Length: 306
Length: 128
Image (cartoon, rainbow over all chains, first blue to last red; front, side):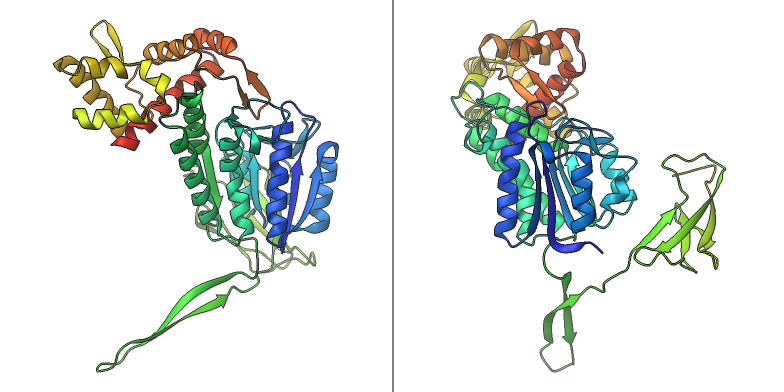
């Protein structure tokens, strides 16, 4: 189970046009730390695959936040080589992942969720911004501030204890405020500001458990009531701590499967590595049976999927 | 859309945006400013109503042809309204380059056309 109140940030600097994101992500790191989150800030030339994944392995953070070039199936670091790709999405299992990167919502984000990530926020299109001076902090740039302030809101709100859904909603609200700010403006680039802010806002995708949080214990409110005819209702809202669920590891299923083919899955307890007996496998909600005493179960990919 | 509502849309537009073609009436491309000047014409009012209806029904404004949208962007370029932009897949696109992408209707050109549709739709929806 990833460690709550803990985050790893990846913020490269040397990649093309990355200085802005490098400086902006520093505000995310500062904000998270200001809210008591233990952040490992993997930055500049250190922000490459080996170092970032080592930090994730060592700190086991509930939150991974990163800026970097991306594509549908890749998120990259300072050397523009992959930090995350379709082959290592399981490293994000149990975590909330927030990527300020292009296009990762097309394949990488969904793959992370399929591999057990708790939540994901990223972009389905090219995340685009305008900046007057690329070497300065985008938060003080007259054009870039609207983009980075909006896009960084999700991470900052998660740091305050908001749920994934609330953080995403807050981000949309800031995008809308920034769009509003440019309406009626006499700045020649005002239309382009609105254009790209709208583009980025609409490209944002949120996947996974909308109630996921990164701070404190996992709690939710429930309402307890007692009613009796002739009496006013009695009620009390109490916080319920969610049970700490253990994690399993499942091997034997490739990322791409063949229709009609059987696959033997092996299921283990993540911490101890002990085979789990009696775990039920499903394909498209159809039961495939229970794991045997070796922790194995065979599934078959049906002819008609979906 | 009545005149008062159109004025709200006009006010929402960035100042220079009011000079960019907004609707096609016959062979004419009219900007928001020209729409106001010609509000008395039935064809102008109908063109605006059609644009607003389209935006409210389909945020991607697919009813507007690529050529018309591209002509809006080219006008913005001539007026100095196109900013260089960056993407975090590692591109920097200068306004002159964007015009070439637009002519070729390649990935970046088509992305800008889609973004322009979203822009129009966003403004109209904020009034509607």
